[in-house]
Image (cartoon, rainbow, N blue to C red; front, side, top):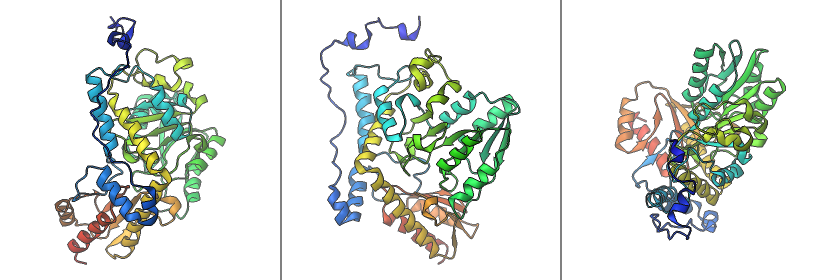
Length: 420
């Protein structure tokens, strides 16, 4: 007996009765967002309330590593826990899972924000999984060349290394500048590295190493003119900069809403441009994996039973972002990033890795300490509950929960430890 045949054809909703459910939500009472007029009159008071009322982080925590894993706000926590309770009580009409379901309503809402069609979008567990599906699902064969940059995340490298080891493709790396003078320098370097053998160009829209923003649209357009498929690792893009996939022009895209879109860990998305979906093979399969006509991108979601609550959390995170206003969020992130840049330039023991051209950075700023011995610094940061990432080269990443005082505290500790 197949697992899907374990219940009679009438399905779960019929077994539970057709009357409307009287759902008792486990979600706590939530505080509405502050009036936007406060943002216009007293912006720091507005953002202080966002941190205090919408997040559960204690006042003594400074979190400067949003680029690794974002912090989920209270509405997302409520959506997660509320769905788990309703599912346990069977107060849902659908199976409380995903892995055999297409989640059309959720995909439609997310596609509207990402700028693509619902049928071009699949939900997966994270960006790494999406990148692996793309790399292992494309018919790139021995002798074909795949070009990547030297600033890719391990999740965007390892999938192609596996492909190289198994099939004999030629994986080649182009070195791009860490601190370019302008976006065109990046386009020229990458497109100039393509050869007649190149079949796929795989690169990050925003690098995980330093937060460098690449001119994705220009790169994809130039690559397509040369007949090269483009794969964009967009883990750091959505929620940090405006993204409209139809305009980007890439063939495939992998995203991680758990970084910048307030989503819980365990959710991601895979995009394939409509005419390119049929060229991609699924990697994990269940029934429907070959139903290209009806399922389209959703066939990449037929992977077996998974926790549906994370996608309720993801949608809650998307709505929280939209309620705040994406442009408002981007502006706040940029304001905080500029604060870091300005404070770095005031200290002779530091140097900027991030370019000062605002087209090239968002909410991630990378700095470099001129001294190599930083043991005392990390001990002091931990003692002051300042969460950071890196070593001599350090990436500081901010979001709307970041307070100016969190940034000031980082530099105050660094000044004291380094004897400034």
